[in-house]
Amino acid sequence: MSDETLYKIGNGTRATAAPAVDTKGANDRPVGETTVPPSAHATRHTEESPRLFIDEKATNRTRARYQRIAASYDRMEWLMERRHQVWRARLWPLVEGPRVLEVGVGTGKNIPYYPAGMEVTAIDLTPGMLERAQRVAAELNASVELSLGDVQALDFADNTFDDVVATFVFCSVPDPILGLQEVARVLKPSGRLLLLEHVRAGGSLGTFMDLLNPFAVRVMGANINRRTLKNIRQSGLVLDRVEDIGLRGIFKLIIARKSQTSVK
Ligand SMILES: C[S@@+](CC[C@H](N)C(=O)[O-])C[C@H]1O[C@@H](n2cnc3c(N)ncnc32)[C@H](O)[C@@H]1O
Image (cartoon, rainbow, N blue to C red; front, side):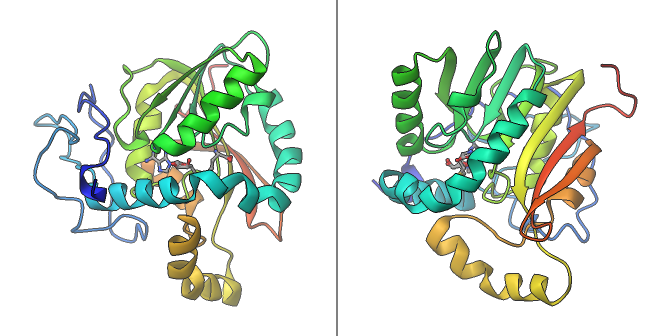
């Protein structure tokens, strides 16, 4: 099966318009590449809303990369995971729920940290990653609904979740702003997005990360030079908390709100 035909996800039922986005300067949006013809994967649009389409080629490439590394992903990550575990343990107690969506669940590394009493739904783009998460959930007898899904076209109604959580995901989502807009759409008005992310550093280190990025994408499927804080602002979400947690501020714990005024 070719990359192009691998698993179509999403029913194209984005119920409402995402906020208009200034694409100028949004370095992560593949300007000009996202206007592929409407397809089963394309989002619904209205007269008032911008027509936003998923770059299916890039999305299939991302899925194919993670599918390729799914079996060895946990081994590849084991050293870093010792540090990530500390951050996961810090992030999850901040989740208030009760309705929680985990985006990009991967091999299920967050599942042991899900707080009790939450109604967790978790999605991932890649079947091979999701299968591993399903195994972890079964071993831990965790209460979580797992399914294939694309954060760029979520199969959930508007205003569904109290919290959306993603750890090290928006570095690999082909169109992170579109994904973040979808997160905003499915969050309740009082809802929050909680992230662990690595971002592009400033200064010469940032330039070095730009140079290294094509290699990182090919090997790990992740962009190491994403300007995720800027992308969050451009998606319409409001930054609430940004904490430097490691490697001179490259790793961050981020909380963003859907609304200007905190309702919680
Ligand atoms: C670096 S892994 C992180 C996995 C997990 N969150 C963790 O902390 O170990 C990135 C995950 O994001 C998923 N992903 C990438 N693009 C996605 C998208 N558009 N929608 C949903 N998941 C996506 C990949 O399949 C992969 O499992």
